[in-house]
Image (cartoon, rainbow, N blue to C red; front, top):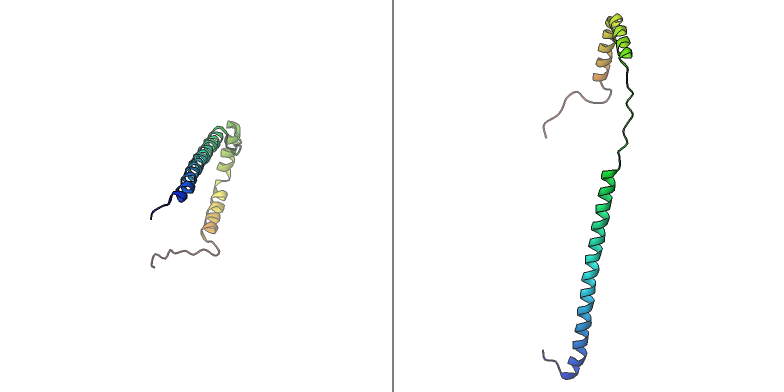
Length: 104
C-alpha cells in the first residue's frame, strides 16, 4: 500500500492527534485506578478504626451466683427431671429427620 503526497499531508497530523488521545486515555485510566485505590485504603482504615457493636454482658455478682447455687441444690432432683424432659423434647424435632443419607 503506497501513500501519495496528498494522503501523507492528511495522515501524519491525524496520527499525532490519535497518539495524543491514546496517551490522555491511558493517563485517565491510571488516575481512575489511583483514586479507586485511595478510596479503598480510606475505607479499610475507617473500618479498622471503628469499634464493632457488641452485646452488653450483664455482670453477675458473687452473691447472686451463691444464691443460684443454693437454690439449685434444694430443687436439684426436680430440676434434673425437667432438664431431661426438655433435652428429649429438643432432640425430637417435628420435621427434621433422624438419619443422614450418605448415598448419592
